[in-house]
Length: 41
Image (cartoon, rainbow, N blue to C red; front, side, top):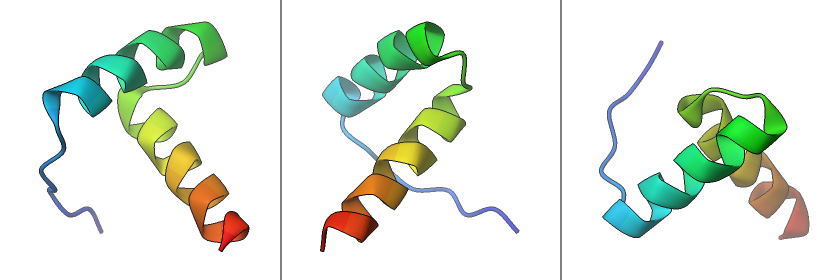
């Protein structure tokens, strides 16, 4: 199941940039950052 969320233009731009470097989709990059953040808490 997928859910649409709103993110800032800056976050979307950074995700696009880093996703190319890390060979992920933009969605995959945002999910990766979310998992890292969840582990840090």
